[in-house]
Image (cartoon, rainbow, N blue to C red; front, side):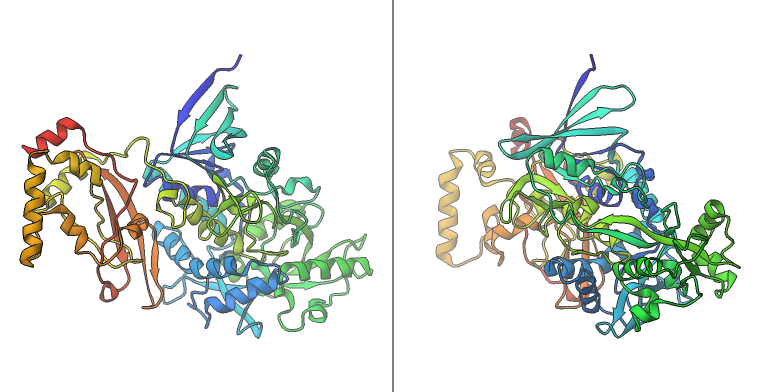
Length: 588
């Protein structure tokens, strides 16, 4: 009989691809997080993404997020959730910069900026011409994203359970409360109890015979949700990538056409000029794939059986191919014996990406129906359907949805997300290193810091340091019964005299112009759109050794300090009260 093991965490994330590890990075800085994956994390299918990550940085050409939003909506045949598309296109800019700061080695322009290239369906000025919007690292961008996220997860101490196959969700009164997993190495069963479960299990491309998907993309997450009686959405929308190796389905990135590659039929004609006269080979994937199939169906295919078309790279300089398309040219040599320098590569559409999946709202909360959410259950990445892709995903948006509007939103602990219905208080506080404790103690001593201090900034901007006070009930317990009348009398006398109290802890909050209800979102990343600046917060939970109260510290990198002003915010449900012995020592 297999042994059953019990585990308790605040957040359990199923899947360790781009969305799963991005979620783990965010949540593990606040609460205890476990990541369950049936593969070693760096073997996840995110590593197969080649072309790039779209963001309107405008490093090479004029661009803005509104054009990007238009392309996303139009590319999805106007079946896109337009609010979700707007969020993705806005947040993609910060997501790329975040990855760069984590260490992702993007290709660079001569000026040192992140390089960008053209990609299918991405245009400027609402379809006028193709635009350079894809941020890339050669033709192995997904691999670089995966390695960068994993290295940062290891650095942050994320707990991984590798080669654990999730069998089912644990539901309690309709709420997600954990997961059951099978350990492949031993055959043991592991029960993970959690207050929130994030599904990031990828797609289901292996239901097709010819596909670019890895053997592990079998739709496990969608199957688990379906067996629990929850709905799936847009399952009829599955994208076929135009350029898979003919007969094999192995992906040749759209980056090849972005760098100048041309699709030709058996007669050597550039046939996309007839189907998409403006952007030709860089039309959205569904248009290109249908055009290729039509050429073959009408007898203009290439090869002995006339069952594929040709991707021509022979007119490109070898230096450009080696620098920006090293992997796909190696695939052509290895699997087809074709030398891309001198001869065109046989290609044909291959099953690539599922637009459908587990229905979610823009907060990544799983929907039970059109209005109600499943409390405690979230989904991100390809397993989720927001629907930001509509009936057709634009190239390079896989990485964007995984690392910004999906991964980052699902990763925010429910206690720090606006409008959440679930409040999480950590099971086990994450204690700081002794060196960090000594550093904090010395800084507090030098600055005359006291636990009643309140350091704050303006609402919806990131805080440099946000200190969560004890609750009202705790403050009452700290004050003896004999001293309460005197305290109240002194406060009344102070109010009657018209002076501002300085010793009362309540007065610190009373002098604040912001309602205490807004303090619960103090740790959420925020953007000052009106001032044209962005401030991102990477909070780290620490435990004060001097007073036994858990304080929250948030470090901020702000692009412009001149636009930052102050008001109070309070992080609720993120502290643990001191013991009676510690309280008595404090009073003494």
